[in-house]
Length: 588
Image (cartoon, rainbow, N blue to C red):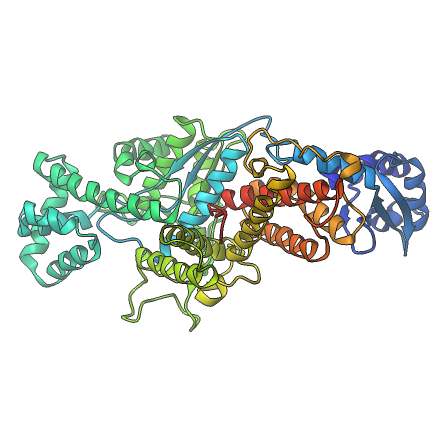
């Protein structure tokens, strides 16, 4: 039950009657009461009445008796609302009986394409791939949970001129040795060796150019070697995804090569629509409103003067395919903020061409960079971008050591499992808890801390509740309640048994009831720091509740009611962290 929305729904008709038109009641949580509406203040000039008078008449007309223990006008015209214990207890029981924790499946599901991660073949993933992969996976999880049909599109860089030099280097090594080198999880060395030869050897450069021509022409041997490069790279990418606990699989590779046959038809259609213009021999579209710093129109180069195609053509072909063939009505491009102008132009051209029909829309889900302690892009001591696999190894090693120190009773297998959940979770949460439009500094000590807005703090709260339920078994309570897909209230819980006498109990209840509206908001905005921040507020409220309110050392029905609050907290934390792609160990 979304109490904030319910109160707004009760106030809205009263405001409409008083003012003669629709009004947003602007109900928000407040420190003055449970909720507050300040809508009357903004209406005073419009209706020519004092805001306190407007607020008083609204309260006279609003049907609030079954929801509020107190409803009063305060200050210059605020409406303060205190929810009754009965309404609050009923909301708790309803939440406990809902396996989706108040977050319904959408009534009109869409086909949503989430384009994320996008590494390049024959190159290892580095820290620059972290944000796209983690943010995109959280978006896919949340949208899928809400009931949308989600198409994960891992736009693999597997085509273009670099593959000429890579295939030639593979041939120079010999296919057997080249295949062995590619399987040694050091793709960067293979790429660097090819690049060094390309830069230093004119004969190798010429062979590489001819090999690109053979690749584009579909030469059998060249294609076979290209597939070897792609296949070994995909095996490596999938290994990293498994370690990072993301949902991308081999079925989700949507490589650039897939769209090569679609490039000529894209250009032909743009030409037929009258959108294509020649600019110094290149085929371009000039999207309306796209201008450079000099005020001159900026072109989107669809086909280069040498007849080749670049990223704009591939992105247009992919978008056209996604709306035309996949039936997508929402497309999310989880790519760094520096690409904002590029996507604005691509989307503008797609709209002009009719490839974003009706309600279909494309969104650039941009993000900032991961920085080192010096405020610059995070790099290794050698000055190279940090390999993502090395970063994950470091996270797991640190977290495993932390688990052994904090809980010496864990056996080796448990310590490793906890270390993996905490280490990977810490890395992902540090990213998702940051406003995606901002850069952030990668800080091991902060992200692995058991205090503050971190994954370990939330995981510790969950593990503490698991411990409470293990100790509650002699009283007849079963921790299976925490995992049940068909959740139901604990046996001793009913509206009369939900404890609300302590301020910490009420604060925890309001935090738990806030999960559903936050999840719905994040589905729209894809600003996952709001979800992370809400989970932190839940964990903080639980910590205060646990310190003030004994759970097992009290009699029934208070024990059962407080266990209900504990159980709901665990379920909210578990589901919320799951949507962020983070595990919740039962012991920590």
